[in-house]
Length: 297
Ligand code: SF4
Ligand code: SF4
Image (cartoon, rainbow, N blue to C red; front, side):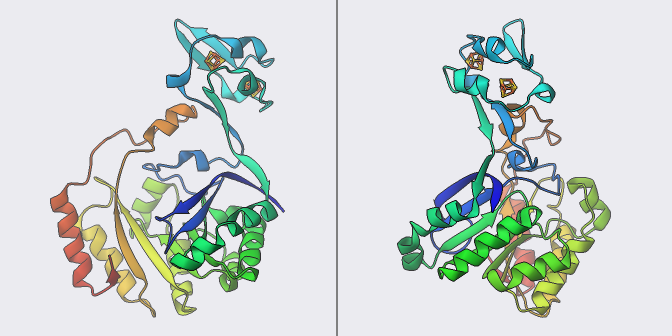
């Protein structure tokens, strides 16, 4: 079965326990304004332009038959709507300033690539993590990888926003050892404002997973000016502390490292601010988390 991915990161230490291979799938059903992986939003391949690598030879203008490129003064203009993804410009660009984001691969290819590192997973209690984007948007592909990894005795984790139908969640359930899920904002209207969608289904799925005794790690990305108030974190902790099985919980401080990706892909960055979370606020929020006796880090 084929699916669309951005890349596979081997030897990852940030996406679950131990050493892992993380597969990033394309396509997401949320639009978090602070997202640092906007290359995973679209469920299509995308043309990426790295201006810092461009030597302004303008070969791309000549090879593209669809008039995607033009020059404005010194700078290259790109009308991505006209692109038919033929790759001619990429093949002819001398400086690798043009690349594609997105690659169709067979699930079997992914599994055999992941299996190459089995010895490292065994020695570190690691495994595979399927991430994105939102893996449930390619549910058949995701399920196929999960099943094949379980058949090969590989620990499986899924990094998901949990915005999925219950039947999809239940189909994944037997093959997922660890659910890594974001819980960004408790207030539904506020969640909709910042992510494009209400959190109703997400909260319901967290409750469902907890009632099924699923092993869960819940993350809150703490974004300055969005969800960094004591009220925000209190309401999340209160919800988690009332679940039938208390999940592991972590606060993840915001960073702005992915913001250049918006420009490279010709996408609008809707979160133009470079505020960082100060240590004092983080300390205060950590104290709130600690006060709930959650399984927290
Ligand atoms: S072909 Fe590559 S290096 Fe030349 S102008 Fe186009 S993007 Fe820049
Ligand atoms: S991929 Fe093809 S259509 Fe798209 S910009 Fe490059 S040459 Fe033009």
